[in-house]
Image (cartoon, rainbow, N blue to C red; front, side, top):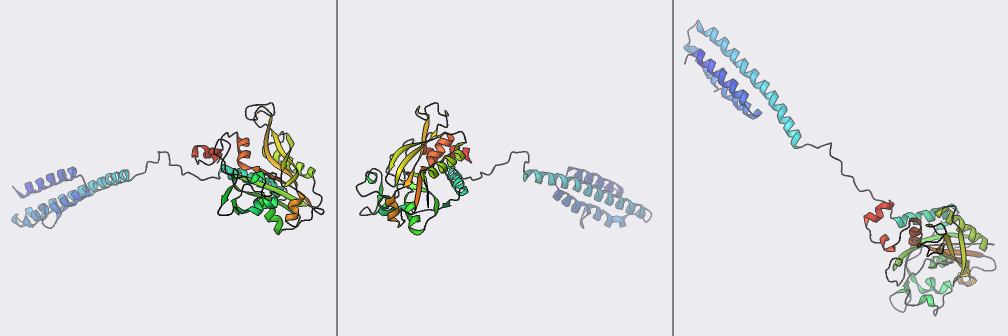
Length: 344
Ligand code: DAH
């Protein structure tokens, strides 16, 4: 093969190889193969001495032109390959921004905490303060100081969960002991709401749970009367359930209040006409209340001649059930997000 033919064959094979190269690293190999120190073109240039003196300048020029052409081909192909390689990398490690995102689940307040806060908020607005007491109580606070002597039926084993020996410690059966604890420490005037868990020896069914929540409220001051109690409860009920709710008091008995009453609100479902929710009475019972018994005052060293007061206690679950038409108390404690999620 003549020198010129060899040059011709180099440019032909190099161009074909460049075109066929599938990656930038293949291009590197081609570069070495043709333009490297031992490459085909370099070797051919070294052989320029075999040509005649007249042929040499022309040969050198054409070899340089070929070198330039190969270099240009290499860099052009490299640019194309680099951009497809980049596309490929982006595709492999890519994020499909058209996919719907994964929504982080956001926490929320349990419905019972919401209702509790709502109730406390109403009383805070009326000037009350929040107090709390222990869930494991002693007999004195849970019963005796509240005018429930040892033989009182409310102490029967059916209702109370005793802790330890000699029946001294009990899981509190209501939040009323907080009345005694606060009055022991503070002098009137006291205006208190006390939320918390209470415990009873109950079998679980749609309306009973051995653990539930109550809010106790009480006010002791000079010249507090039954009218103040009714006005306070009406304000609470109208704020909680709406202005068009009617309120009714029925005489009742509680050992720690005298007189005592149970308070009903006109049925939230039927408005008072009578339906299944209100057992066709038109009324729903929502709390117990009364004027604090002088015996309770004596137990905390308040003078019943100087001070008077009222107290009330309500079940948080019951209020929530009435407000939202929930028919099974167990739903509050099963932690099924399909239920709880509806109220956050
Ligand atoms: N302690 C009562 C109960 O658990 C509720 C109650 C009734 C609280 C009358 C009171 C009250 O403060 O005056 O059912």
